[in-house]
Image (cartoon, each protein chain N blue to C red):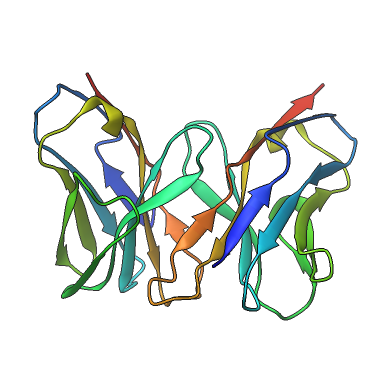
Length: 112
Length: 114
């Protein structure tokens, strides 16, 4: 079984809809991250969490919110989706700040 | 501030020939650098990482990278390309602040010709 899983893997939605992307990990890591990938831009950090009570904004957090329900679960929400949020979204985990980040398989989100 | 620049957006090689993917970094500190690979419709996989130990870092699948401080470079190489190496490759540096976030280059797409 994969250590970092994301659901759904693909989602098509309409402008204005609320969407939740979920991430679960079995690696026992405290740190979890949400990134989005756009062609030619690499990955950019949306939110990160060092533990259940510590959530921080990344460089492109506007229009997104997150919830850390447990050590193993970190959800990303789009309260009112817009077309420029169409992207590939990745969750990642790490043991410590300088440790390797392990990525989930990604969620491809399309907002029409 | 830390940043990385991948010098080629696309690289095309023939199977069996060497691979060179170029990355330059900028960092006020001794950087922690990574190469990740992303195969089509897959997540990102760590190839190798440099954390100020040996300057020549060996990774998975025959890849290696050499940290050259004088040239601020961290180029990825492989002696002989395989068809399965076709993918997108990202050079990455860790931001040395409280976030420890990864800062990604824009990526290099490697095409391997039969």
